[in-house]
Amino acid sequence: MRLPFPLIRRPRCLPLTRPHNRRRTLLTLAIETSCDDTSVAILEKQKAKSTLHFHDKVTSDNRAFQGVHPLIALESHQKSLALLVNRALRSLPEREAGSATWGNAVQIRGAKGEADTLREKPDFITVTRGPGMQSNLMTGLDMAKGLAVAWQVPVLGVNHMQAHALTPRLVSSLNASSESAESHPRFPFLSLLVSGGNTMLVHSSDIVSHSILAEKTDIPVGNVLDKCARDILPKALLENGKSVMYGPMLEAFAFPNGAKDYDYTPPETQRGLNTMKTTQFGWAIRPPLSEDKSSSMEFSYSGLGAIIRRIVESNPEMSDPERRLLAQETMRVAFEHLASRVLLALGTPEMKDISTLVVSGGVASNQFLKYMLRSLLDKRGFKGVEVVFPPMSLCTDNAAMIAWTGMEMWEAGWRSGLEVRSLKKWAIDPEAGDGGIMGAEGWIRADDTQL
Ligand code: AMP
Image (cartoon, rainbow, N blue to C red; front, side, top):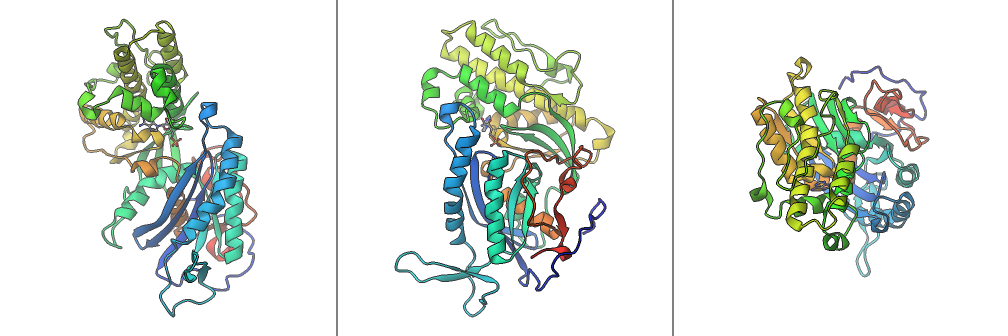
């Protein structure tokens, strides 16, 4: 595969002493620790078809802090990561009798009374290198380097946001009916990344080129939904919450009967997305950037949080039906703001070859968002644009998407040096000041690898 950027030449370290992939398949163990999820995956890829042999995660309990506390998350990584890796190893594919040699197998200790087994050794270790919380990333990166050194295989440190963008290609590979199926979506495609940390619209033209068309200027959409949920939801519901992810609780409260409760008519025009609607209770929510910045390619959510707080504070005895309408309106306004920037982008001549919009990140699991986006695109002349929502387990932070990104980078010929460090900030746009994904130091071409 030819890459669309100049090859970065690194000094040659140790020559390759053996081919890394004698089998027809590629096998990686992947680790994600960028925020509050400790996740490990084992992914095998045979041409276009992939199999997830193991995928699990542990999320730290941050309920006492109403948000992710970096130290609590770090402690959780330190407690959980080695245990998860240890469990994952038992899911490595078993070696056929007689095919094992010490070089390409791992001996896994059997449980009490059971014999040890020989299993396939991963071809490489993939790990999230950034962006994220520095110490948390380091926990994963150090474990990855340790495994790589012990097993004498390369390590690949990948970008967490790149992984979110490539997730739909993982899904298509997991669902592929044959080894010769083509990865979907094909480049170029648009991605709306909507999570607790990010809100961005990205144009992906190859695995490492992801141009940011619109980005948050203040707080992320997931974050504002969590904040609004804390104001809107009845106290009893909040107290029974099992995590600080209030977004799913807000959706469940707003639409107790799911799609049957949706009452949404998509506006015919862009202007229609930017108008205030007064409700039966007398309040109205002003859409973000509704006046002078109505066509500016940015996302802004801090105002929405402040408006909702004001409405709730002005009526502390608010009834549940009024709270329910407030929850529905909050989501409509928040999601129309997302949709308005997608529609602006799709309307430009540069995007005429876009046939797929991927929506990923935790907020993408919202079914009302799914419904609204489809109906808005249909109404505004984009029936031909397919909207792809990766399954929920792959929408939030997870190691399977990291494993897949490792596969794509590996096949493109890239490895990481053992000296690489975690990156708190790391853009995915090649035009960004840090040079984007390939701007980070430490990339090595396959034939220059240290291991
Ligand atoms: P992530 O940062 O990708 O792990 O996503 C977490 C964010 O997604 C949190 O802010 C959640 O509240 C939000 N989220 C998850 N599920 C939903 C949902 N069904 N509706 C709205 N927001 C959600």
